[in-house]
Each structure stands twice: as structure tokens, then as C-alpha cells.
Length: 136
Image 1 (tube, rainbow, N blue to C red):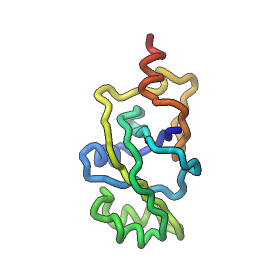
Image 2 (image 1 turned 120 degrees about the horizontal axis):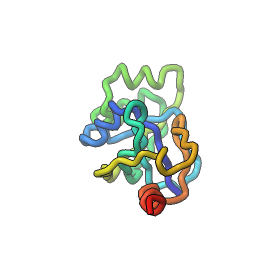
Image 3 (image 1 turned 90 degrees about the vertical axis):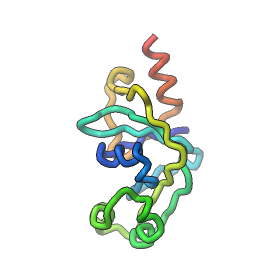
């Protein structure tokens, strides 16, 4: 089981550069069998730009998360705490092995009625294989 995450392009760029090693979420997928994450870079990019394997997933109070991973967050302190404002718990998903796609995938060309996930959605198969097969 894999997941498709919507991430803003500014943060997608930091993942690609290697300066963002954790993706932060207010809520997280429940299925424990997820080990691969596809990155949908939201507006204005609107493409699936790469994938990563999941490292450790931290669950804690935002202040503890910040203390633990601030040097690998790709965020400044105000961005981080603004995101988690009013939350008593948050998640930090470790980005283990990131693979950028040479040719980012436009999901609208491969999936009828594609709607980007608000936060994440489950995907059954490897997206790039499905899209390659669908083109033929």
C-alpha cells in the first residue's frame, strides 16, 4: 500500500534539494503497511514529482517535534508553529530515500476525474507503473 501526499511546491523543492528530511502532518494515515509515499506538488505545479520511502514516523507535541527535527525540517520556526497552531499533537514523517522523477507525472492525463488529495490518499499500486501502462 502506498500514499499520495499533497505538498506545496516550496516544500517539494526543499525535499528535492535534500534540506527537508521530514514532512509534517496534523493527521496521518492509519494503515501501517504504507512504506512508499508519492509527492503531488500542488498548485501551480500540479504534478507527481517523485517518491520516497518512509523512515521513522514521530508522533508528539509540536514543541517536542520541533526540538527533535528542526535542523532537518526545511522550515523556519514560525512556519512550523503556524502550521501546528492549536494542535496538541503532530506527526513528522521521515523522508528516507527520495527519488525525483525525470518526467513528473500529470495525474489528470492518467486518472479520470483526478482530484488532488486534501492531505493524502491511498494508492494500491506504484503510480509510475500504472501511468506507463496506461499510455500504451
